[in-house]
Image (cartoon, rainbow, N blue to C red; front, side, top):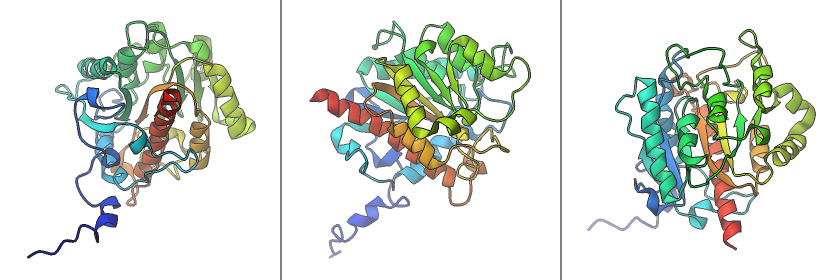
Length: 332
């Protein structure tokens, strides 16, 4: 008779290389009605054709490493997996995967189902065009939230390049999403911030100036260094106020030393350390986060130790915990 090894192998089940890879080893259930927080892969890379096209491999890379990630948020004293129903819904079906604009429509339709179910999505991209269809589905007067929302956008670049009619043929592109969400009435710029921008502009007008003209508060990396973590957190909380908020996190906001595997590497000027990124996210505790995403992971450029995927997993965990903590607190 084979011996019972279940008790002996309990610790093995936490190893990232053991078992079937799902996001944070959450149950796989494609029905958004069965969860409070919906983890979604968005393997989309045709919205940013100017750089490498392997962002669609991001969800798979995060699944591979996140299965071994921690269960409890030490600072929040929270186990999100026990506090809320958190499921891996799988990946958005993208039959036109290499054609951007039809794929954007498919992503929007998918997230409308999540919104109708009342779940809050945390998404793994994919390139940075994906917040546009997600916000079309979950923000604005026609969504469940019923109003414009605030945006907190971490990035090395503004993605408000409306001086260009398309991004190499992509209309709803990774370069236009942060301005389109304003013109479409999904996001209130007067309650929104773009944080971490660095490097040189792509010409005139300067993209930081254009974002400010649109109404965003822009805290570039130089200003972040002056404000520090606490000052930046205070600015976020004052700016967002009581509005529901969506978080979009581009991994290129991190320094290349801790995130070399990104699709638009911004070198020459220091990016965020992991401490700066995580403490800033943790400072948003208590805000009504209705959704979040992590984008622009390029696994084919990552280090052999998968450091970008590991650090991306850490950011995702913080986003999940912000939502779970808010849901726990509002249930009391």
